[in-house]
View 1 (cartoon, helix red, strand yellow):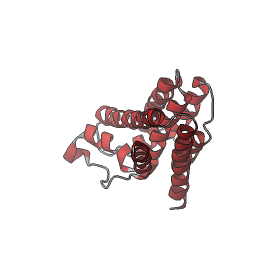
View 2 (tube, rainbow, N blue to C red; view 1 turned 90 degrees about the vertical axis):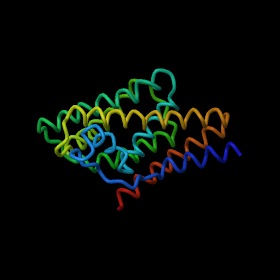
View 3 (cartoon, rainbow, N blue to C red; view 1 turned 30 degrees about the vertical axis):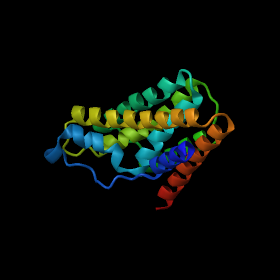
Length: 195
C-alpha cells in the first residue's frame, strides 16, 4: 500500500500543472507574483523537481550544492535579464533542461557534486533569465525573492520524494522508481517541446 502511495505521489508531482496564470503584481504584490511564476508552468515545475530528485540520487554534498547552485545561478540569470543582457534560445534551453534533467535522473548518472552543480547551474541561468524577462511591473527584489523561494521549495519537494522513495523501497526497487520518475520527466519535456 505504501509503495502505491509513493508511486502515485511521484506520478502526480510530475504531471501537475497548476490552473492559475501569472499573478498581476499590482493586484497581488511582487512577492506573490514572483512566488507563483515557477509554479505556473510545467516546464519550471518538472525541471526544478528533477534537480531535487537528481541531487538526492547523487547524495553527499550534492544534496545541498546542486539545488543551491541552481537557485544562485538562476538569480544571476535574472539579474542579467534585468540589465538587458541578451540571451539566445532561452525557451528552447528551458525545455531542453526538462528533458536533460529527467534523463540524468532516469540514467542515475553518477557525477561529482561539482559537475552536478555545473550542469544544474547552466540550465538555471536560462530559467532565471526567463523570470527576469517576464517581470512586468513587479518590484525586482520582492519578485526575485518570491521565485527563488518557490524554486527552492520545488527542489525540496524533489529531494523529499527521493528520500521517501528511499525509505519505502530499498535497493533495486528504489532505483527503478527513481528512474521511472526521471523517464516521466524527460517524456514530459518532449511533450512540452512538441506542444
